[in-house]
Amino acid sequence: MSTASLEGEGGLFHLKGQIILANAVQLNQQIEKRLADSSLPARVTLYCSEIELADSSAISLLLAAHRQISPAGKSLHIIGLREQLVNLVKIYGVEWILATSDLKTASPAG
Image (cartoon, rainbow, N blue to C red; front, side):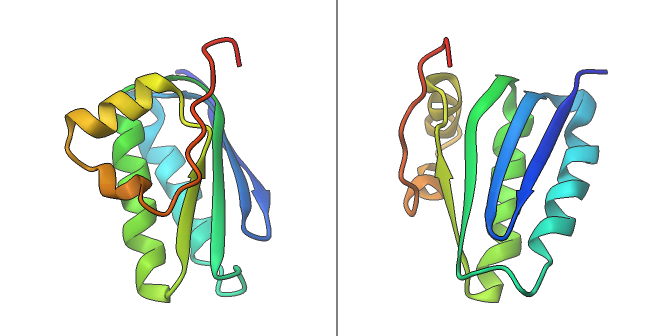
């Protein structure tokens, strides 16, 4: 199985590794647990520049994170999506998940 992780605290998180179907459920559980913390600030930032490889599972995770955090009156800001993920967001027609994001597309090298 490919490795993926969510690291960080206090509203600043780093999504790392390969986010593919094989590890999406486990990673979604990590994200849900972290975002359920009532002490999170109003703005939660998810840095994505260290995602090495991703499939449509990554889009599902971002959508789930938005669905979880929005009812709590908080916003999710996504930073550093690589062009591959930005293109998937557009293909699936869910550009709204980037509406509150400071999107800075990372180069393939990093």
